[in-house]
Length: 434
Ligand code: SF4
Image (tube, rainbow, N blue to C red; front, side, top):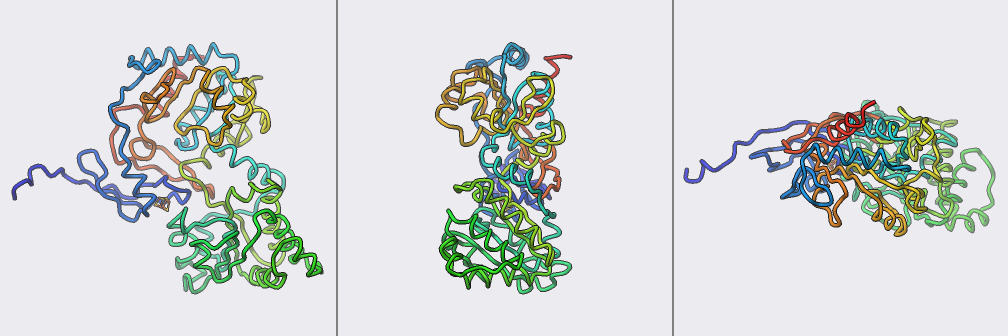
């Protein structure tokens, strides 16, 4: 056939892991030709876009102030900047492999640096709530096999986690849920109708600013406390009959799963609202079995929190400046260190820090920045030292962690001319010596 000679030979990569959302689907099949992903199978639209995104083009491997240099010269300069710094800070990491995250923590320890993952601002209220009251958790596999009542509170997985229903929570046939969707009751609470609420058996329209009060009423019902309807109505803005109906469904569960997201901690009560949700789930365990889970975020933020907890005792905002790790959530966040002008050099790995104030960003722009990322050598303004890295999950392997604590291998489909984030971090550690 004319033109056949130009067709690339296609290879198939099975069970690739998608980092496009917190589902971390590990059943994706990729068709690869000419070192390019040509097609994805089983991935949703978000996942397909993640896999098919083109690599940054026309890069050089390493730059100083935007000018190409050798790998060795760049590593020497990065090591000089970080060792001469009095208050270095390590940022990013939320999309990196666990192996790269571990190397970054070792580097922060060696430098006496502060380390704070990119997703820290959104995660901090949830971390505080879990530290205060604990969490009755489970794996998504357990939810799939056992849950007959599933709650989505203030989250819309149909939009943000498109395969969550299919893989984990609503549709699958589970060991103790043999009828799949028909054997489950789906409850959704949100401030307005969503794609997820359109699939719900019961939808509770909640006031975003009164979620704490609404959860507190559900807790009171769980404890068998008599409530005045007028007080319930004025505190929650919800018909007390609707709340009681919801509670009846919760308490009839054989096994319930309560999914929530970071938005629960964004209201005026902050971490206290997440705490209230975790305590509701704990209270429900006096009547039945109930577990609480987050939906998770794209990339590998759960891995970053696990590695920091494993190596430094705390999941976020760790300060090594005294030679040992200290958890200083108010002082050692990226926002605090940069916003107060305390950091004098930054190492940014992969993800850019999220939610920084303009003041923090302004300070970050004034200090030397060593950036390890796929686009590190093409930034505008350029990084002080740019080190181009292979894309995690697509060109670089390793391990990631789902939001339920299950570790998953990455199966990179493509080759990259550049080292992985882990390789760059280990080269920096070698340069620093003992
Ligand atoms: S649901 Fe999430 S992890 Fe799964 S394919 Fe879609 S974007 Fe990727």
